Image (cartoon, rainbow, N blue to C red; front, side, top):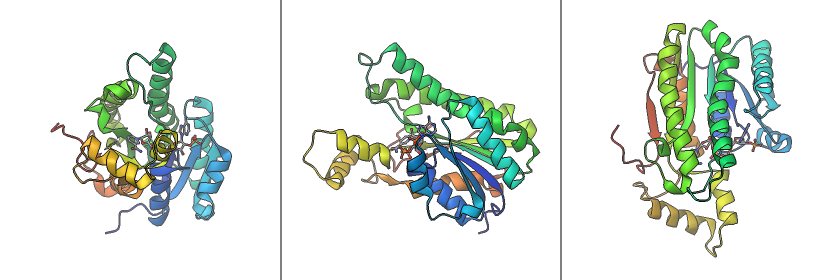
Amino acid sequence: MDLGLADRTIVVTGGSSGVGLATVRALLDEGANVATCGRDADRLARATAGLDAGRLLTAVCDVRDAGAVRDVVEQAAGRFGGVDGLVNNAGQSRMKGLDESTADDWRDELELKFHGVLNPLHAARPHLKASDAASVVNVNAVLAKQPEPRLITTSAARAGILNLSKSLSVELAADGIRVNSVCLGLIDTGQWTRRHAAADTDQSYEEWQAHLAADRGVALGRLGRADEVAYAIVALLSPRASYITGTAIDVCGGVGRSIL
Ligand code: NDP
């Protein structure tokens, strides 16, 4: 099936690792133009080396910096002639419970999660409005619907972003901009390799992952792959998804137990 993404331009935040990088690759495979960013220049350069530079724009940018995000979006629009899609992916989780979470943790988490969506959205909105197939995908977590006390700030912020996504889908529908979310479970990316490296364990990464999946009750019995998430994101970006807005797709191997 032709997803209709060839020559469309998509901005993907946080494209130097994991889900963002898999999404960049999948979009390039579909013939789209892609702009992506990350904070670490070396990591971004290493991750995107070998990809089609003719259709890929990379920029060092922190999504919390509205001006820097605007520059990336304007560069993309200038080089490729517009912006048709936005994937708000950049971010990370904060493994802390109530008693460990300081006021700074709460402020930093809410700033990253909310401005990580709002800054790119404000920057891209005029370009999205001009597109005939505009789509925004917010990369979220099943934590939004199923909070984990050991990730208390992240769970609360994720719930807020799911709520925000619904409001945006209604608000932006008049401009022809669809807004959807993907809610991730445990996906095998840098987030988990870093946690394994920091864990006090003799288990190999594979053993540790298998134990983790069992401990968290992942129905499919394993962590997901970044390309399995990218598939859902690309589907929501496609003009073929033209009647899908305001929804959230769980990509979580069955770890999510919410029926809503
Ligand atoms: P990775 O750590 O593998 O990749 C995160 C990417 O985001 C990197 O490119 C990183 O680059 C970039 N990034 C992080 N913070 C910023 C920032 N402030 N500004 C710009 N870029 C930034 O993570 P994942 O692929 O696992 O995660 C992708 C998204 O999915 C995140 O929002 C994460 O919270 C969410 N998620 C992931 C889950 C999982 O199990 N993996 C589960 C639930 C949600 P750099 O550090 O150089 O800036």
